[in-house]
Image 1 (spheres, rainbow, N blue to C red):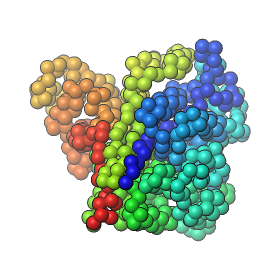
Image 2: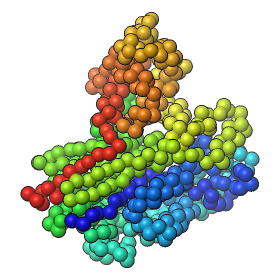
Image 3: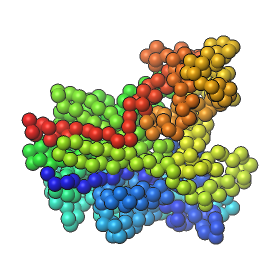
Image 4: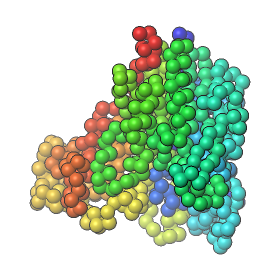
Length: 566
């Protein structure tokens, strides 16, 4: 077999057009008006907005430095699918293709396209005097301090694919092979399927954007559109946003029910790949296996049905896909680093979760394929510089509001900003939306020493620190619980990529806390703050075990080739 080209896999770039005009009086920095989203919005979001343009630029520069010519965009390539944003992204990708002979292969994520008719968006920006202003696509919301522009609107299927049409969604010159689950036609009208509400009152004909492409001899990329829009029961405006269950939490769980033709296509493509000796890689925005590999069990007990719980694929997904012959799948969506494997009937399925460019940890993947195996390498963007104009805007915003400056405003690099953003996220999102208020009230302002005394009595911190043979006991004892909680979330998301971003003494402390106070989630939460903390600390064991089992380079056996040889 001839050498196969390497592929870069970029997930959840969430590109925001910082330089674009959204038709409002934007803040001016160094004599230039830029469209800065507010820090107030950023600290409540699981991703940063304004830093995305530079992060994507750095990722593409790294792709170029490694002489990679094929790039998969694994969904959520735009901030929220806004017309202005998508058009600017198209221009960036077209220029990269033209100047560097790159080929992009795009997949839609839940933030790129919305149902058949699209969706209005309303966002908060910094205005000319650094005051926060609202920019919306909904003209009915226009008023004092609120600006309306159609550039903020996000299109639906198939119109929303048009700006990205040249990036794999439709056949291109040079494709050795190209098809969809419906055949070889790339016309939108030939790629339709039917969905109905369970009460039978609402039925729609929708487009699916999946495709299979052979960009180089012997390599098949199976690009799966796992966006699912399920009609709701009841009476709604025809095709309106409210008429559908949003794709955000649906993913493969809903795909099994509503896009069964995808499963049939996967089985057919997998069988043909084995028969023809093709190396097959599968991609979709959503994970097919739990990317946390069961390490988030404590969250369901402590926080109920969080976004993580709602977006976790059920085991039935793995069973169906393994039976269908899928072996290696790359996913985004949850902004997480992780490798998960499942076996069934002698076959194995591996899901490789690709981190986002705009959340901790910022990274993408490079895949090198051969007849015998796949080598997957993680490329971190942690040391990238931060655009000082954005930090200037944040400082002016907080000064105007007379709020304290966040540590994120003075980062040493991009990774440090994202880690500080995680801390802000704990305060402004997780504490307010997921954590029980009484727990937050009782632990706010406490140090690790204070919590240890609460759980084990006076002097307990000494025993905990002694258990991990640490000399800087005083510094660890004074560690603010907010810092510990932020590290908890960083470990959850970043796995192995967090191990060199969190000081080693803290990691040893977290293991000691888990051993001294931790309880498994299966024991149940009794509703007390102490009980909450015990289960919370216990989760450190699962997070650390998962992190320590990972690596920046992993090798996966090409099971399809092995099966064919047998």
